[in-house]
Amino acid sequence: MRAYERFLNYIQYDTASDENSPTTPSTKKQLILAKALADEMQAMGISDARLDEYGYVYGSIPATDDSLPAIGLIAHVDVVDCVPSAPMKARIVENYDGGAVTLENGLVLDPAVFPDVAKAKGKRLIVTDGNTSLGADDKAGVAEIMAACEQILAHPAWKHGRICVGFTPDEEIGRGADHFDVQGFGADFAYTVDGGAVGGINYENFNAAAATVNVRGRSVHPGSAKNIMLNASLIAMEFAGMLPPQQRPEHTEGREGFFHLCGMRGEEDQATLQYIVRDHDRTLFEARKERMQDIAAYLNDKYGAGTVEVTLKDSYYNMRELIEGRMEIVERACAAYRAVGVEPWSEPIRGGTDGAMLTFKGLPCPNIATGGMNCHGRFECVAVEDMDIMTEMIIHLLTQDFES
Image (cartoon, rainbow, N blue to C red; front, side, top):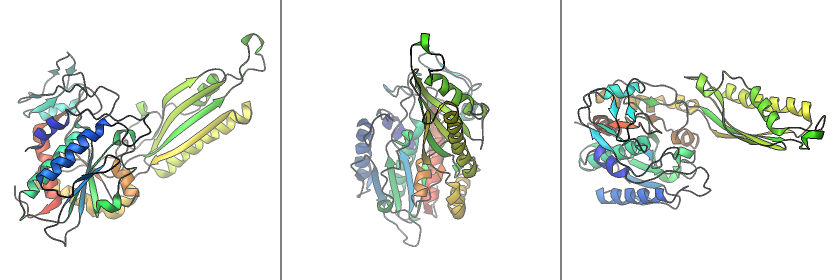
């Protein structure tokens, strides 16, 4: 079965995660697809395929040559909940002409807005009806891994080490690696199949932290407020105004870091700001966190001790720190791309991956493409042929003496 055929099945499962849920997985509906994948792996001959209590799926294909490394492949089953993910009504645009595509609800997938889409000219383009996301992030990766495994199992003469497969929940809310069993997984190194355009190999990502700014004010009747009231909402606004406006996501690119205000609420006596803090450079990342604490110290000196409190929690770090010592893993992916006629390219990820966190847990894990485009929105799409290329690339990544 080709990757796109599996993909069209997987996207029928609504697997949106929920950052407000305390459970793992964060939504029970992720377990439905996870169980189906474990059963499908068993049916294709991955006899140790299993679903654990946290919603992780594991399985492996035994080595045909024990001298070769054990390589892992990882993708996540959840999708974002910022746009609807069901009911899913996808269709294939045959022989895409490279122009604008009107979706069923009237929205227009326009290459003038989404230029990568034009590169799919002449291919079969899978799109939504405009009412939901497609789920290519990351069910395209799941489908490509499954299709590659099926082909490898059908060719027992191909040489490969142990092939370790893992499907994770809750990647979209930053928890995908939390309960991943690195030791039980058994890979020497791995790749997340969770990228964008074909040819991509990513081994650099943001250092990331979450910051909560709590402001305590003093509320009194406004008629008698002079020299008494401390308006927590205004102090919170003062805090926000002291961060450099040019260092926000909408003004940065490449390796440039940022402070991103992603939530706020407030009254006179209490206000809260929620930030995410990002930078590729660890020194600059630490300086960003220190800057927030310095602003709090200044405001506490101005308005009184305990007025502003900043709580910082690191989320993940730049895997480049560790991958640079294992560049043969990156070179292996580059060679696999070239074997299928694709020139590899790399760029820093302006975000994070399960692989970043797994790298710091002892499993080196750069990221490779799926072919998906315009993720996390109603204009998400992927080309059938790009999924085929990635399936073949994965086979080259895992095997020796592969002949297409």
